[in-house]
Length: 187
Image (cartoon, rainbow, N blue to C red):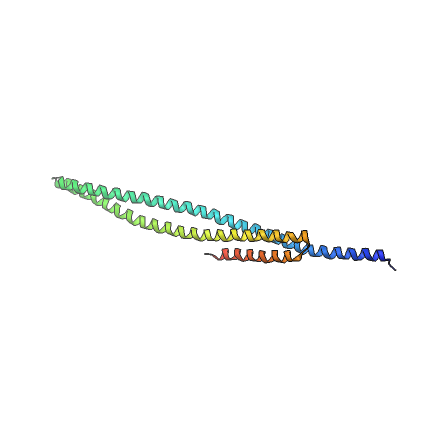
């Protein structure tokens, strides 16, 4: 027959084991939250990087647009000068050569206007794509915040042994995962 002291020690060990088992669940939850946090952080960084690249592409398109526009204006000016010059020239052969050159500048001006419309459309398309990436990055950043808070709240369970913190951390973590999924679904 066991003594009262041995029985008390055995009950104490069983209580410690039960408490330890509960903390394993909390620790596992924290590990999962940490992995999800790392994934959300990675997605956020990638989205922000792509956003910067698209900003540069958009700027390049607008610079190219400006170049083409100036080139078209110069072609128009050259055509105007040649029109005035052709009116002043008496020699028919010289006037024909000037008219051919003027037609070349008029054609260049027309082509530049067509090009700037295409470039402008492409820049607007890049801008729309960048806006979607901005919204995605914002979602991932928000999810990162939720997951960080969830991790901290769960860690309070280890300090206080209050399972309400664990459940609150899980709920906040689920909210973070939902926000990540919403970010992934944006197109």
